[in-house]
Image (cartoon, rainbow, N blue to C red; front, side, top):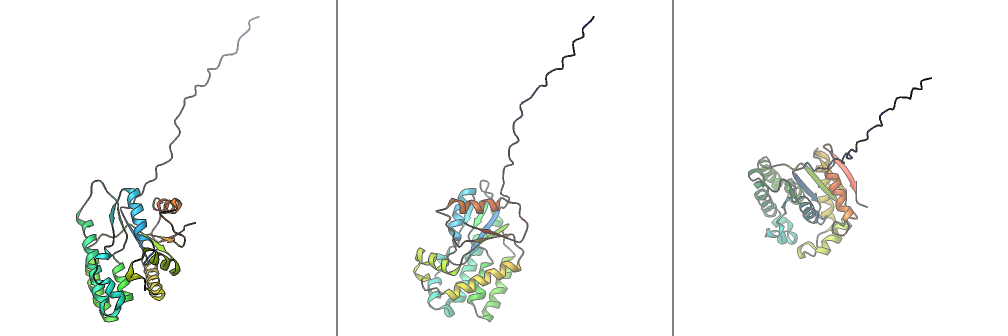
Length: 236
């Protein structure tokens, strides 16, 4: 009797495969603008984001405005030259984005939005002066690069006043709550009326220097594929 051995099946060959790496997150915004009320922490966040992304940094040169201390002493007398000076300086800074390209820095971070000129002018100027200012603004505004995304830091007025006192600029110490409320309301209305991609950050507890998680929340939000409009984030 012939015994037929069962055919030996070849053992399966297992090939080690490298695990699929997680997709690398990228930040696709080339021009990031940070805005918020006086004392909201715009410049601090701009410095940190610029360092993180090795980005070109554009900062408001408020100290060069000779009308700023005079404005807080006599708003009615110095509001118009104050706002004209700010608009000219902001235009001078931002127009360079149209003409210059940095091979090593494809991202730009700014701690102000050019439309800030119009928002503060609306609060500070009487109606006739504001209409004239608005005509000048509309001519200049068309010549500038617009941001890809806006980060708006929203803080309660009590927090703003704490920050103002902490940074101790002498001419700011007499700013009234009512003025800060008006600025806050003007920003809020602007954001609602413009379909700009905006990260609205509840900065009530913001501590970007002392709490790395707060900065990471901003970075994570920037690296998401968000649609135009408003997106709300809270800092724990």
